[in-house]
Length: 388
Length: 179
Ligand SMILES: [Zn+2]
Image 1: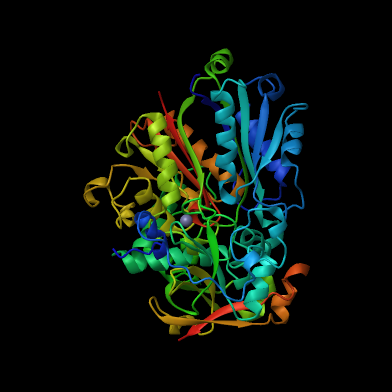
Image 2 (image 1 turned 45 degrees about the horizontal axis):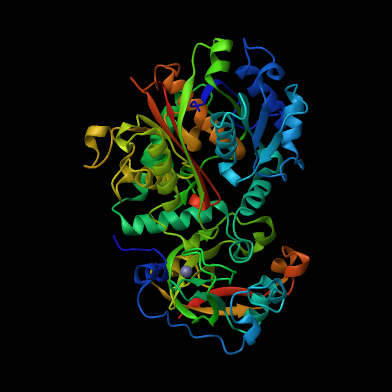
């Protein structure tokens, strides 16, 4: 058993586009396979993270994406877990290769969120919440996360201004990321002046509705050496787990599911939280970055909101990790089913030293990815990636 | 920091203590009052199914499955306890009073509820420790954490029926009002 490696990556443009889901996938695959043999010569199976059939009135994305990159008669599946679908697809690919069952697997994600406008996205996302109690009460994705944010601001010293600083930091990172949806900076006053979507969360606390696709090729070392790819990163640890579907039943200020899966991934990788150099966490809303930094052991309880500060200015107990160097879901964009894969793309660039100089973290050799589905940790997946 | 964890889950620390005190719902027929151990017990009359749960709610009774092993209250009832895995569950009527744990306002609602927005949403912890998300009948500005509330049950209105699936058409709507 050898650790699988991510041997190639690609993304489509992220944002509102005139391309459909399958076209966005084609763009991402074309980038990933630039200079490589045809996918059919390499790929043994394909997993496609995808949140909702309501955007394009299309299921069977496994079959469709396989066909669109020249594969037939290979296992091909759509993976569903709301916004964690991408990392679930990655996890399936990693487990397939790690077990020796397959040599090379394509892990992908795709979402065409803008197809139904704001109303369509609001409705599609609300399907992630419990039908019996939450949906019938009219909850929405922003309101679910606002329930977390309200409690977080109640229990900690954090303020709305602190959350705004997370948005500002992530916009700054996105401004240096050619893949990002929002390649522009913002400032605290702009964030604070934006309209409440679901108080205490404002428009600039929220990740955008995004079209996009992302692809990573997961392969064993035989494949990576045969392909003689210049850069690859090792998948050293994986964790995955479900918590309650209803947010009411969960701890609102300690994201237990994320803590569990990050710990699993650290243990597999043989590392401690302090070894993590960069982390792409599921900042669908600014408060999530704070909560997940705490859950993953990167920040002390109640102090995760200090993520935008330089390491020397953070409270004792913080590691020197850099969070959301891609711009995060907030500013890189959040094409739901593709987000977990897009996180892996950022880690690949950081760990291979191929990120743009403005956002490249010097000496980054260990990355943590946390991808969540439903509100917060209804399902969570963590990966630890290593440069070595 | 205070602990916002569902208080009844803390009962796992007391597994070896005396049996959990459960006030079995007297209006639930005996054959449906404990968690199903054969498929025949899972009919739409059982509160361990959603039709049975909403039928009781329509009569004004909010039911939970109470775990005999750890004390967790599960709303709506389901056949096993998520906290300890036990299937030793009994149907218990829940108190109608509790407090707001967190709250917000929905300004961009699901399309079907467009005319209702803005409306207030809260997570409420009932006096039994059970937690439930629901709408609050007062504006966001009049709501706060720790506010006492009581449960109210009503028939679905036109917009709520419009978003209901066929099997949900008659299911009542639960809300919280300041106590
Ligand atoms: Zn239990």
